[in-house]
Length: 227
Image 1 (cartoon, one colour):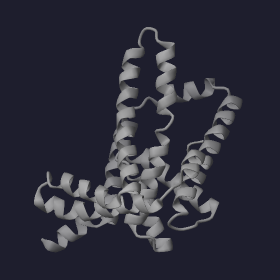
Image 2 (cartoon, helix red, strand yellow):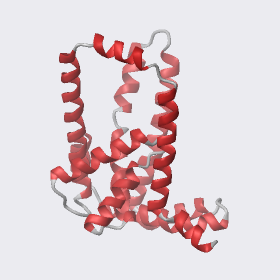
Image 3 (cartoon, helix red, strand yellow):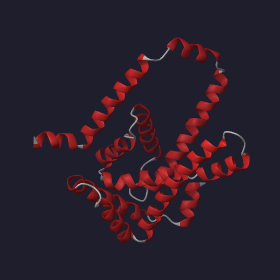
């Protein structure tokens, strides 16, 4: 029984199980899809526009990988091509598995190839995802200025995302300014968990908070990353 628990709790096993689960969901989706209708829509598309959009998407992905590389450089310096390959692998896994396991795969790759502990690489990905949410501010302003019918559901969704962004930002700022205080907050929150789960979650969460605090991004660096 202990051996089985050890196997299930292993990070690689979790990723493998999530991959199998994602493939099963994908198979179920494929069985319900009308491929004839999809092919008809694809044939009606202008390949020139598709090529342009593909180029813009790939450029955006490359720029985002450079942003993550700048954050990761606080832990380890990696070539631009490697950060781009890891970033694309993360996106592919997240598309394939609806459980956001791409970050775990990236962390495992960094641990295997460069010996970076998972708890040190994960904070860089958390910080990068936080920067992904920065466009929510101009989006809220734009929707507010547009007004009009049907904007209320969009505004509610944007406000929800903005609240998540605010909470994460506060955690990051506290982690950088007062690492000990942030760790104390995490330990207090973990007290709400059952003891067996708390014993596994709390040390990892504290290490992640300490890792975020260790990044110590300057105001100029944050402004550049937002840009």
